[in-house]
Image 1 (cartoon, rainbow, N blue to C red):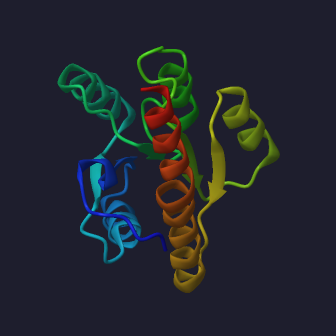
Image 2: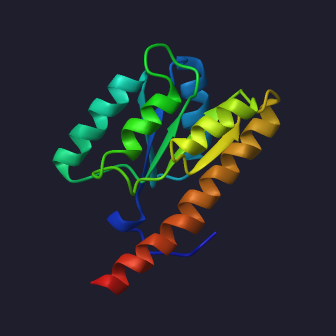
Length: 155
């Protein structure tokens, strides 16, 4: 873990688009861990997630990571990913599909839609917790500080 002074720069927000409320609650709890700096906003479907992104853009505070389920009614995760990654306002926001499907066609579709990653949900709770801890560690402790360093050097 990196020692950093707490500031708004250290806060990390995740948009979770997941249709199953039980899964969403578990995922949000595991992603937050014991960090008061990580916030998770849950949207229960693709259209709500896209509306939330529009609202965030209007406020000038996009999430630092989008995590979405693949199999959702209405717009599925790949369709939402295509919309997000084709919109220049959201293109730079990392987006990860988190799903139970390991079907090669689903993985290929996600990558073709420019997903930053494709992660299979583990059935075993301990393994699932380890997977989400790894996601949290990478995107918050590795990727985000590097991105922030790049922004400071641009200023």
